[in-house]
Length: 413
View 1 (spheres, rainbow, N blue to C red):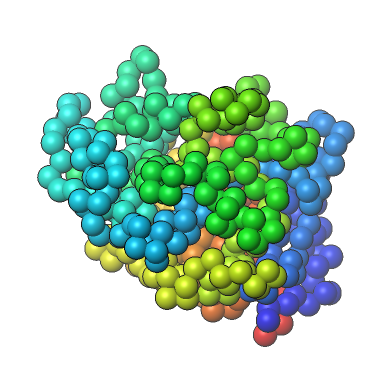
View 2 (cartoon, helix red, strand yellow):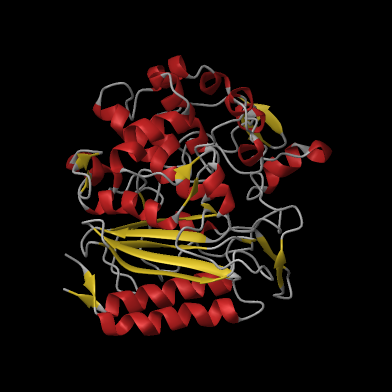
């Protein structure tokens, strides 16, 4: 079982504190590491809930985890695949459940054209179905012109009506693919995505602080959203949280009218998210509760490269038309010229990494600079959580890598 040499913990905490104590550092950070038994072998909350705020960041702080939600949708989909209610490669089933995916067209040359093949669940989970994000794809952003497009309204309209930006299966493109996977889960199960998560994933594991609709207690511990200016200055974001509707919906009617965005909807305590990571490390069993979430062979499948035909997908780079949402990035995760892989909802490291992670590691991120990883070979995973826009923040990413490397150096085999 992975454990950390206690002598290294003080230095790792100091490294985090150095960033959060800088007025233009990171405001507040929570960093957690977990083993496959669900033990938090490193946990540190540093800084304040928001820059200039008196409230300290704590281990109970709640973050909008944005695209870290996608991995949970993958688990839900694969549970339904195990039960025979969904299938990875059945176009007819997808189109029966979601006729919109049969009718959707492709944006080419500024106009809409028919798609050449059907969409599968595997395509949705591997971001090859053809959908994009308006804050990453200039063509999609321009298509909506002066009216604009916002995937974070919480009303679902901006997801249901979006065209594809690529022909299905033709390339990897990050987008609302997993929102559609979440819609499939809802329509097959008859539950809202939040209710499905609570019933089949969170409650069996004893998780109480991860939700599409934060409880009053969670809201009291919600971290502030920050914005970093081009000159590096950090401030509280003037408009607060990006995804606001789930925070203001109170009545059952308001909650029912709020879209459960599988691509970006969850709010969570990092320590609880780490319990989900631990379940992946432990071949689908949550060791603390003894509850099996997925079969081992299903977890193996999730950690298998789904897009071998696109070994350089992450090197397409990000050239964002909305610079307040994301910085330009030439490479999602620099690995020299080694082939890159993508599993069922997350990036795969197929070769040992610079921090010490193995070639059996999955990882992904959330827009306000949160990053998680799960190294099945070493039985180590974790999460760094911040609330800073735009994505690709150099200070948070540098800290993520530095502390992760320190954890591997301190790892007791």
